[in-house]
Image 1 (cartoon, rainbow, N blue to C red):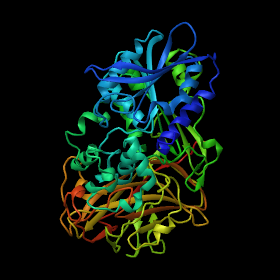
Image 2: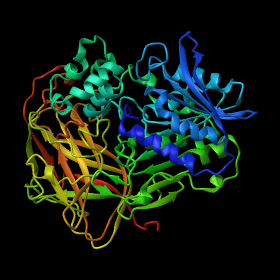
Image 3: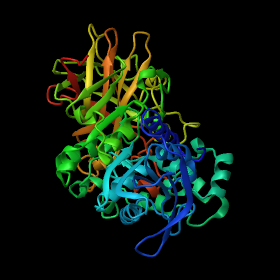
Image 4: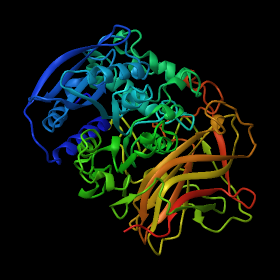
Amino acid sequence: MTNIAAGLRYAAVVLLLSALACSAEIYEVTVESDVAAKMRDGVVLRADIYRPKADGRFPVLLERTPYDKHEYVADAVEYAKHGYVVVVQDVRGRYSSEGEWYPFKHESLDGYDSVEWAAGLPYSSGKVGMFGGSYVGATQLLAAIATPPHLAGIFPVNTASNYHDGWTYQGGAFEQWFNQSWTTKDLAPDTLRRRVLKDSNALKWARELPLASYPLLSLGGVPGLAPYYTDWLAHPSYDDYWRPWSIEDHYDKIIVPAFTVTAWYDIFLGGSLRNYMGLRAHGGSEAALHGQRLMIVVGGHAGDGPKIGEVDFGPQSVFPSGTLLRWYDFLLKGVNNGMANEKPVRFFTMGRNEWHDEDVWPPARAQATRYFLHSGGKANTVNGDGSLSLESPKKEKNDHYIYDPADPVPTRGGPLCCDEERLAPGAFDQRPVETRADVLVYNSPVLEQDLEVTGPVGLEMYVKSSASDTDFTAKLVDVWPNGFAQNLTEGIVRMRYRGAQDKPDLIKPGKVYRINIDLWATSNVFLAGHRVRLEVSSSNFPRFDRNLNTGDDQGFTSRLVKATNTVYHDRDHASALLLPVVATPAR
């Protein structure tokens, strides 16, 4: 699977492990290649079909992918052995399928037509389930909002809920590393991709400005190689370009159960959690409201474990085998395999490295707890005087630093995709970046007992800047007794989008603003002897594009200026890290 990003390889491993652990009648498999399905506008999409070599009709598992259907042979054969018709289809404009490729644009209608076509195959029982990860998760959700009558369930792995915020942008900042590496490494035509992978200097080229002139998109002199990339830059706000593809605007149209899988170090963690909670609250049927399940592992696009980055989470951290086929045996075949009696939420808790089962996400046991920022005005670097405590601040000096977009804070691990060879994802020691003067560091005292943090994490902060636009970033870190600083989760806010993603509003230099940074979520036990650490800065590059501090159109300008950015934490500006503390940890 050399042409698929790490997260997609991870999804394949997850699904294959799901098959291997299921005990059922095993069939011989027959394969049909490049079977044509005509869409409503006449465009022909082609699929490979793997099915039991036996009489009768079987449920269908449909996977719609832009990454070449031939990359999925092993898992398709395994599912077919267990009594499913497995249809692996190239989406429109990719590999063997006709039409024009444009991310997200055709997936709802093509998904509807493909589900109904698959349901009508002569060896189909008429029940169709979908599966797959990343963009292949998007093809499921976008099909589901079109409500094809024969769709009975979906199994989206590590995918988003809104292809503006949480896929292309986060907190108003452009997901630069993902957008550039995914576009050029996984979506470029085969001939150009081979040249790119051989000659690419992606980390160097990531510094090129403006963003719209990214060099990889012009290699080979191929015009119109990735028009969607410049379209994404041309639509930094959540506008009518994005709304037709937003899952979270259409939860009420999804009428089938979904088993959502995501991971703590996955780039789409936030969207996957929103999908689960949104379908629980707003799904368009009783099945969608109450038939939802959620599983959270460790790596996702960051890897299949047990080692994710520099941290080994133990063999128990790997995705529980048998999950996908147990789900579809229960849902499509009516097998009484115990799944009906299991709690709908299961997640891996880091630190103790153990699994927990819950009735809801976030767990009802977790209580939002404020850890206030403190310092004597010198929180800069890991050697500064920044601290965290439950005590609210009184009169305190503020902290400030100079953010220079020509010298941004480098990304070190975290939820990344899709070029792990050049920029590795996952858990890494953050001390190399904590020595910078433009990184504020706030530490709790050494913990005398274990502290479980499970649920959504946020930062409420009072800030000002000398610029008309800038970014503020935050990172939650678990500091081990030996000093290793393990990143857990992170977030960003672009100040022009501090209030809403659809209404940019530049700031007034020198004015104090209250902002909220969404750090998504985690489940981690800070063990006794560890510390809780918060990092605050204004860049995390190249994961996110550098705010150039000018207020200009970020995608089409090269002009940059330095900014002096200030964080307040006093009686009138009580900046605080919001942690979901579990008072009675599950054991």
